[in-house]
Length: 496
Image (cartoon, rainbow, N blue to C red; front, side, top):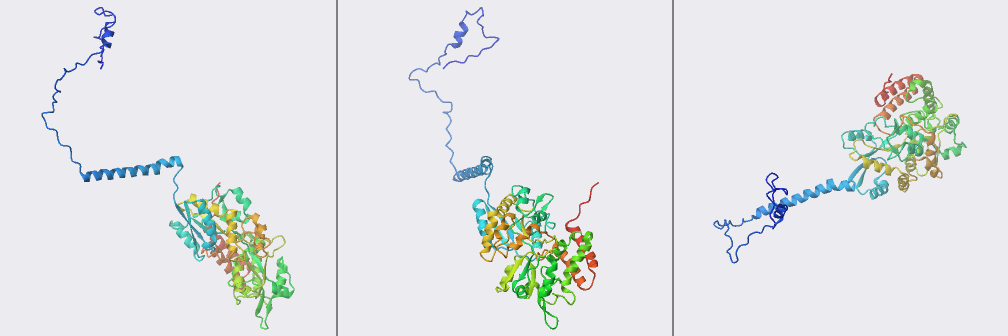
């Protein structure tokens, strides 16, 4: 080995030191120093520890060994968890987790939607859909209670008039689900007015429905009456088609109009007449004369000696199904009920009559939305987007058509022509482009804005039938409407 040379800058000689010839310090510093070797056959050096006995090797405890093994396993498990949970997502973009979404519907059985749900789940294997068909009775109350306490559905159905009641329970839909431009292109104007607030879309329908006129073709053919297209001809035809016995009791009604309590769709019919006559259904005081005329016209069918309908008759849809009414006003879903009651009944569907330049009907339909309390809003948005694309809606229509004469009418503007050959369903979508909606709508069982509006409307009709003036009835109705909307749609204070 070579000896290490330590130089002291103060004591070490330098090449110019006069006491040492030149080159001497470099040679000495680089000269190897030989370790002295022991003489041959010399005994090994005595260890300084040989006078003390070495301690015995420690005895390993089985229990201690098991603890060490267990701790090692736990350490490896923890390390693996950290890798999977925190490290891998950085490189893989996240780890897929199984998500279950709860979807509340109203009319379709699970079998009807199973095809679309399976299609979605196959494309999104980390998401499962749990569909639950609800009962319409008390549905709105149950929905709002469950959503607010965090036990409600992720996706749910709601009526097109319910947005004021559900403004705190519905998430606005992002452009990734549907853009405002696509929404305007795909859906009818009434849908755009109903489901959009302040530019935000809150729901998407996969059906549309409008109030149409059901006509008993046998009654009209036997009397030689053609289907009326305006209200003047309608009144004439209804008078001609009404048959009474010798006591003046109605045996066949020309039209089931005029009363409130035995006509299922009385709110919808009145809403349609109010709109056609230019009445403002939310600020009625501004158009009270128009509203009074509409209510007076409606009640005229059940007043005086020429009455075509009265409170003593059975409910209007049942009476029509039994062949005792010439003209009835209803929605597409009522076709199946009428066919079930009387498969032999011959009837046709036509657009509603109108006033000159005003033949619009009213729309009543349902949409799907996302709960504000959903724990998986991103996945719920993905399902809603899939549920309401054209292919999914078409598949639902086909599945429904297997059990009845047609499916739920398409909500898409472009799909109306596909139903043109079906004379029963087409009139409902044919009216959709010009349809409007009001809060006077039946069969929602909402215990809210619809039922409360209808209660005031029903009182107005009863009071006019009891000889209260239409003008006075409208004044009371207008006050009721203002009170209800103050709760559900309060006006924002104007700023100066």
